[in-house]
Image (tube, rainbow, N blue to C red; front, side, top):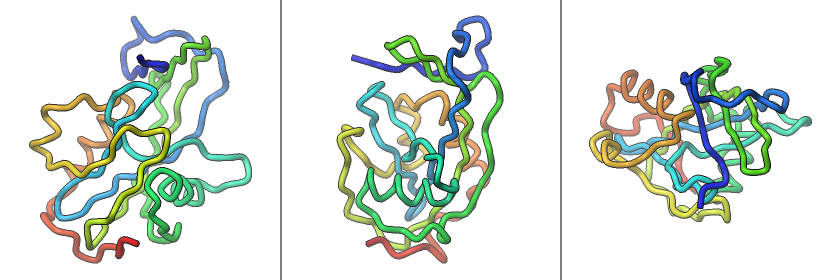
Length: 167
């Protein structure tokens, strides 16, 4: 059962926000031409690893913490490359408790040079690497789908040159 519904670019159906904007950090993690996604427990959809930025953190500190908490991978914050900020007004998460948040996502890239052994957190059902073709058959969180698509449009490499060793 889904406890959250995500919206992007659909003003007719997107509920009005009830909370302040929420700053999040998400990672586009790749290796061997594949993209890592997690299957979220809260919506039973696939999305990028990441989460909220705490008041005392920078966005880079937050993504390093989230990657460790959600996957068990210790990656120094300096290894993440900032891709961009996705914060248009229609990027919204509506929760069962009635809270509706505008989402501002700072996306980071990380290339690994070896396939890591992943541990998943209680927030996820599964984590796995996908080829672009494999993504055609899965449901990606709407607030991440444009980030995923932009990644593949920018990506020209089939490998992980200059990647970060996985722990």
